Image (cartoon, rainbow, N blue to C red):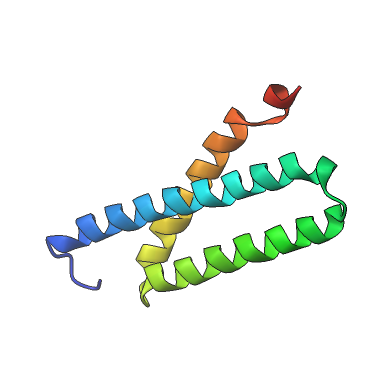
Length: 97
């Protein structure tokens, strides 16, 4: 990505969208875990297993999205953070009560 070609903005936009998707998957997985904790016979195991799976999916996906270019990683992480903020506001504490 050293040269600014016609495909660079398209690739960066797609990595941003991939980051949004990863953020949605991560937060919705967290939301499902929190909803299942009260009914779980082993809530601590559920919490740690859920975190491990969500973190592994996120890290592997970011690694492949990055493809050796920090710009792609930056766009994907930006998308992830934006989706995290949006969904946290949507499903936050005020909505749970």
